[in-house]
Image (cartoon, rainbow, N blue to C red; front, side, top):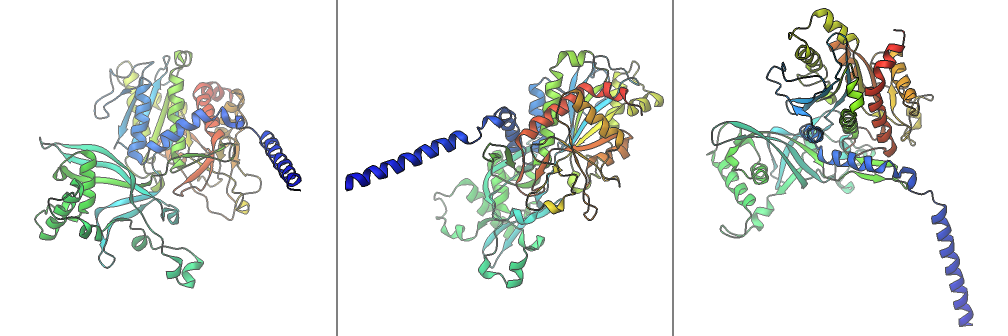
Length: 525
């Protein structure tokens, strides 16, 4: 009987293993997305490195330098430094980037600028100018922060947060230098209130007060009491923190800035940068989620990451420019200038010296055209001709159809992740797209044998966002279209997009540089 029972058990186990093997065989192979994964991994490394606008620009610069681009001094004339066939870049405020490659056949007034635009900023928490904020009753050492942009702030609770940005440092000579700093570990956290301590009304809807409830915890005062006596095993950071704390209490360090900063934060920055704490004279710091970008879905068809809006566009734009300049035949017969402009401050309206509503692109057209002219002068007529021959592909992420909230999308305009790039339209000019600019990009996709682009408009009973396209056209007069890769969870601390859309976006951007001129001249305008 026992032997028969064992045989039955083995037979059952065999059937289960056979069924599992068949199931594994039937499951669609990962090869469906395999060809897209190398680019996805490269993009994910870019996302992880680009924790704020300063790092997004620096990561882009690293790509450009590796491709042989030359940095221009934006405070010096370009005359004699910019030549046909050359490749260059410069920055503004270290948070906005302009990179371009000059076609070998470019002539002022006869060629134009083919521009891909994006933005380097994303909604986040930024350290206040006076960072010190402590909850005495809770014996908690906190950092004062303010909200930048329109974030989904509830997603910032219970996340492991690091801090990054730029620090202004006084050298021994008295000169002020900028240094980038990135503390990529969980030094900060905004904790939720336990459900047991919430009222019935508070449980119905989570609506934190941004001033009172978003301040992250850096440390507790109790850790001081747990420390050993002076001369013990305190770390350098802890000793400096104690020293600064005492100086702040006694008022011995008063320069209008230092006394208002959290001593532990200053000590931490000094330790990371291997500086004396007295060398630090100011900073611009942002918080970021330290969780790395990851592939998701059974076929690795998704990329999950922070700041996909709009680092995905930034990465694809720079990558497309880098790959195009390596195409010798493309540059050799090119009558135009291929350009990428990555702006700061899109999430807060773009109205700044380094935003899309500012003078950056108009100045670039004027200065580069003058540098490439014979006598350094470009007539108003030649400038206007250049403007009218130019085009901006404004790339900012688009809203993919959300399966749990399908009713929020217009029924005939429902972009799908992994379905390719999306043209964004709005009759009230919240987007710059019109019939001609949309037709140009659809025709470029057709000539490059790419899948048809998707379309998006908002429902009539929903508000419509905007982006840099209308602002650029208003400031410069250059035609523009607004496009983007579809994604979910826009403005969350962690967002999702399709792996295959990275490939589609890169191909479309490269095709834009390659085919724009011939397509533009083939359309009656």
